[in-house]
Amino acid sequence: MNIENGRLAGIKIVEPKVFEDSRGSFMESYSEKILAAHGITMNFVQDNHSTSKKGVLRGLHFQINPGQDKIVRVVSGEVFDVVVDIRISSPTFGQWESFIISASNRVQIFIPKGFAHGFCALTDNVEFLYKCSEYYSPVDERGIIWNDPGLNIPWPIANPLLSDKDTKYPQLKDTPHYF
Image (cartoon, rainbow, N blue to C red; front, side, top):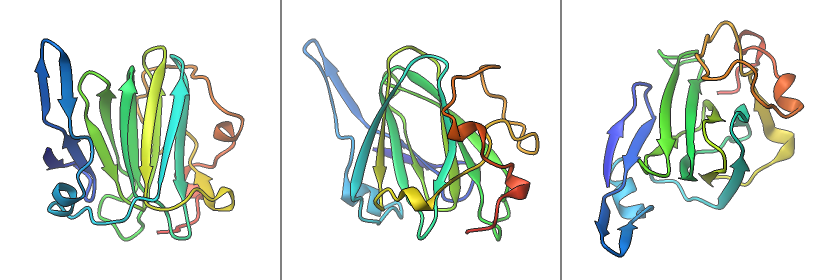
């Protein structure tokens, strides 16, 4: 695995080594030992798997009490993936970073607690996997509106398909500081 730092402190870009031949391919998608050597030492307790059609936007979500560290990846299709630093004491508070992650590039993103996360499906039949350090808790789920003008994220779609809750989240400036 090749692991590099993202632009925002704490974000890690994980690129597995892929071995391909005429039969197909093989890759190690998770190695506790290799991740720990790069400071990713939490215990992952839950895996989530979502499917989305083209134009679906999910986010910008985060959990509080205590929050969730995540490793995300795509196993079918391609997404525009976004993380937003919501750690009030961070020098990059309110800044975002984006990635194209897909089944073909096999890139994974490590997202620590204190970041909101979202993605937009760029292809049909997206399958998105989340490895989480804490169990999902509906009462601790929070979010920031996807089109927050203070963030000015250049989403690749003007009118995404959204869940009802994703249309009602506040802007970052109106969100309590949890981290």
